[in-house]
Length: 86
Image 1 (cartoon, helix red, strand yellow):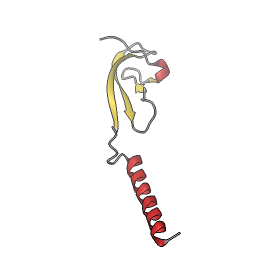
Image 2 (cartoon, one colour):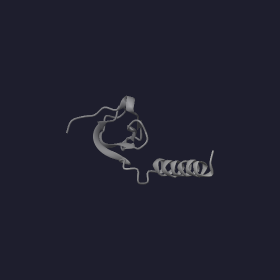
Image 3 (cartoon, rainbow, N blue to C red):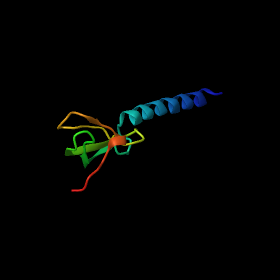
Image 4 (cartoon, helix red, strand yellow):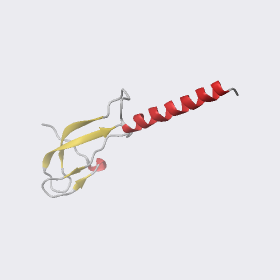
């Protein structure tokens, strides 16, 4: 290999590393960094209806459905998530 090819490959490797670091840290990737959505849910333990936040952050594959009940302190997970109407 010639020095020009080696220099080009090293430059591509460095640029790839810099891009990947920015990508994983959420800098200038052109992608949404996440979102938050408010939902009304009912606590399965005490029956209290309250507002809960569903959050998603890139690069997580799924949104987070975890909420602590404001009335009894019970941790409501996705399997117990019971949305109610307005």
